[in-house]
Image (cartoon, rainbow, N blue to C red; front, side, top):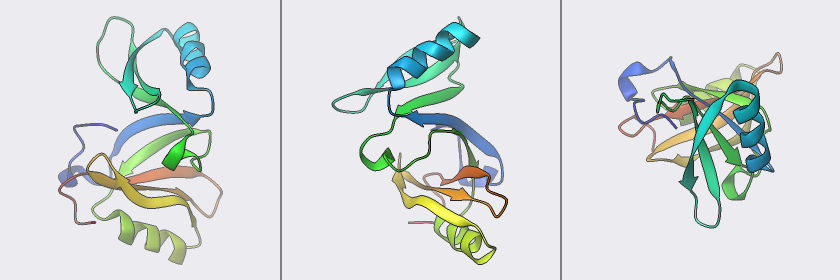
Length: 134
């Protein structure tokens, strides 16, 4: 998750990641297909990966294992939209005919959930540390 996301930039896209069963193979796929380098992000018994354009050092996305609390996250590129209060946004999603696929739950000092809109599109919502959710 982007370390630059703040409660003040709500409504913006703050991050993209992909959660899959075999992150190493997918990491290597994107390394070969789009030229990304990677940096391992230790998660205890395994690593997730920060992906960067070759030579830039700038992290542009994550590739994560579908394990533990991420086991229910769909295998799709998720964009994370920053919101003031992820719990309130999840409730608004339900009221407007969408569904909450995963969460809301804590992550990286903030909170997130994965939603599906009434048309079937999936995205994640994130309240960074300092947001109003808790």
